[in-house]
Length: 111
Image (cartoon, rainbow, N blue to C red):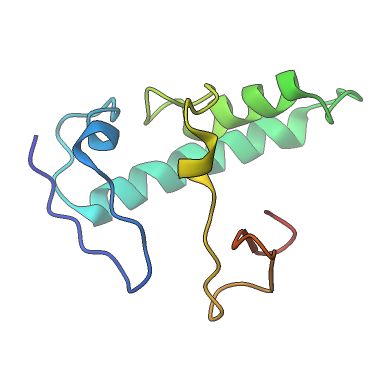
């Protein structure tokens, strides 16, 4: 699959293995990918709004939420990364409200 992706400065490009994790093989541009991801995230947020669970601060809930937000588009949605360090955000002073000493980025409370 050939996807023509353009990345803003400081963004981490998707490698071929990550692109292989897409469930939709017709995607050819970053814009198409962004639209599908946004629709999946909106669906996941609607799911979250209907939740009545009290045990949301658990690994199981976080994994289920991840699946709801990304699982329709990506094969890895709802699965823990094998290499957690690789998935850590790096700070970008223009986009981060706070940066951790190890370079993680906190945007609106997300690390």
